[in-house]
Length: 93
Image 1 (cartoon, rainbow, N blue to C red):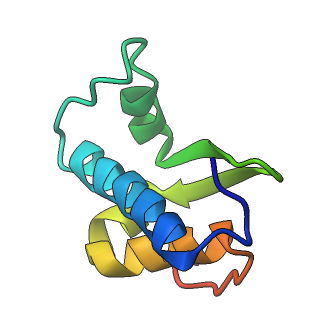
Image 2 (cartoon, rainbow, N blue to C red):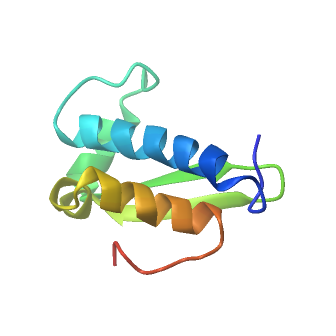
């Protein structure tokens, strides 16, 4: 697990994996870790909310699917990284 003070490379790797999964889900690809279909249900609401569990905190992030679709992968990754590292630039808002 990581904390806000973890090496940036570790946080970026995790942020990239999360962003990549969100982009795949937005594109309609099946997500192996969603057997209950919660991702598809969130698409009907227009946004997804998810948690990132870290050693020092639990982040709850809510982001519209339209934003996930429109943002390039590196920008989505930067947004998640900023949340994890407590930089919190408003890239996705």
